[in-house]
Length: 104
Image 1 (tube, rainbow, N blue to C red):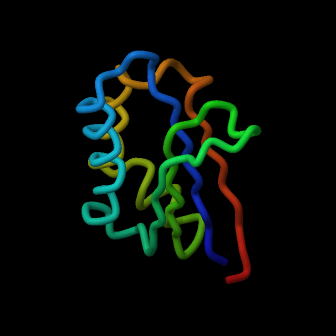
Image 2: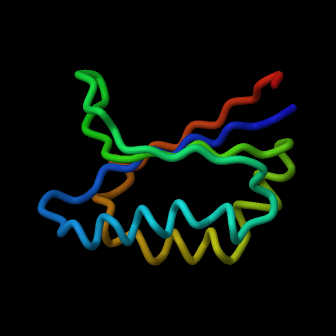
Image 3: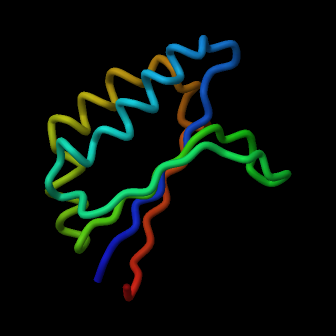
C-alpha cells in the first residue's frame, strides 16, 4: 500500500529569502534524484490559523514502506539534503515528519 511521507518545515527567523529558496529547491529536487519517490506535491503555506508557523511542505509518495525505509531514507541525496539544510531549520521542533499509509 502506498506511503505518503509528509514533511513540514519552519525556517529560522530572519533567514534571507535566497536561503529559503535554496532549501526549498533542494527539497523539491529530491524526486529527480531518488527513484524510490513515485510522486510528489510541494507548496508554501497560506497561513491557516492552525498551521503552527510552518512555512513550506512536501508530500512524497512511495509504493510501500520498504521504498520509504530502504530506498529513500538512506539514499545519499536524502542524507546530503538533511545535512545541507539543517542550519536553516531551527531545531527538531521546526520540522514535522508524518507518514501515512493509504489505499490509493
